[in-house]
Length: 167
Image 1 (cartoon, one colour):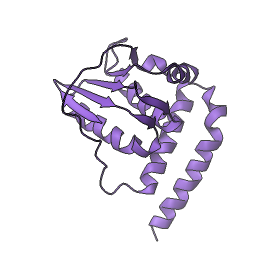
Image 2 (image 1 turned 30 degrees about the vertical axis):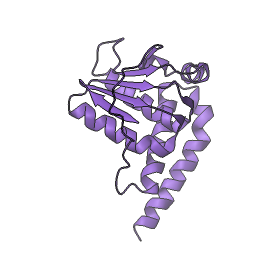
Image 3 (image 1 turned 45 degrees about the vertical axis):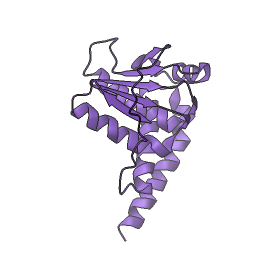
């Protein structure tokens, strides 16, 4: 669920944060950033887990935005992550890319479901998954052993999908 107000985008993540919403969410965040939105609050109190693609996508955005912001002023805020999600952020070496806080979220009343980008293909999703895993491996070398095989599989799958699309 997404609400925008006062140059803030509030994203409420319920259940699993996974690859299925990564392409759409990344597109939304990039568009809002280009339109002057400078703060993105992810309310995670009802988020039970995040897969590596979602974490890699968020980390890539956090990395890119950190280059545009003073240190310690990340525009990406993760609010009320579970202990498990906090542990994963630390273990993957990406926690520094976010402001992590506990407390009451902004309470806009105009939450709407995240819109699906029209025309998103399986190749688009696979490309995003591959990019997310490469990001995690680039941020912390120890992630290479965790995601090397996944990235290799995704690269091969993407190549196959792109070749099939050209026929």
